[in-house]
Image 1 (cartoon, rainbow, N blue to C red):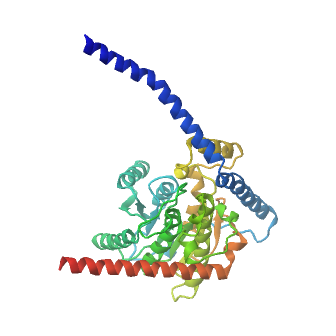
Image 2: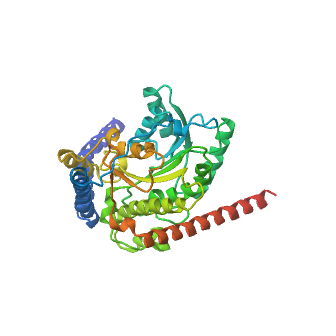
Image 3: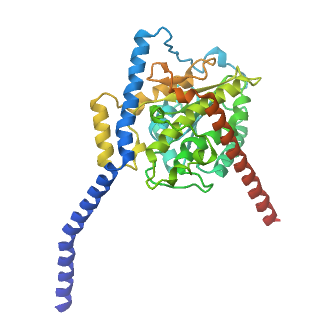
Length: 404
């Protein structure tokens, strides 16, 4: 009897503690939300990003009705005769960050256009789910998935080897026709990659730069016009930083502050994508095959995706609600239009910034057209790329020596 009494008392004690635990949990959640809202980075997002978005739409409105220089580019299907080639029966499109959101939406749209879509993501499980979803809506979709961590140069090199092997095994031409650098994160805490870079900068920019450099020979080798589409953001308008030194590009310069400046870093990474796009466009113009390769930046606007997953849910839900009320929030199916417009624009279109869907383009911020800043960013990025290449070769040599 005493044993039974003791157990009942223990159960009652646990039950009595549950409400306390629940209260403490609610208090902790409220504290997290309060601390997040009191952070200057939150107000940078809430104010500057909203202003940047509204400003972009106002520019689009003014340009559509009052500017004679307004340009809209119609879509050009890969089935068009200009893409006809005996060696490329089905153009290959690579999309990073394709497990959900805009990447998954682009995968579906481009599969409908006749591309052989290669989905790239960090989770094999989510990649399989994305493929299943596309297949359920388009039974004829040609899809292939590769698990790649864009924060790891080693993973990027492995992806290239696997991609080449797959192209060979599938008896396809050793080239790709479209690369969409879509992967991106909004990290609210400081994290470093194995190479020592800030994870957000590495995912949003450095990884995209390295992947493009690694796959550039395959794009140049295409017997039909090829293209790079870099997904950027209206948040780049908030950047006033003009540094492109190693410390800034790697993200180390930002993390010296007491509070992790996640909003500032995100904006900077998206500005880098624009500067990179315009500089690569200029670099390509100096190449012999300039008529075959084009580079375009695409801005989907404000889209309801899971990119805000690290932000307290109550805050992100409120943000989405307010954007929806203001008519500024888009679904993935609508927001992806700018990306697909950029991907399907005629081959001669290059060095432009797509925004707002319907094939419309805008001028990005004046800072994004700073040629000297773009050149400086290019040089710094190339130095980082070369260092990563050297480190990878040394690792391979050491590994081979150990095996022997």
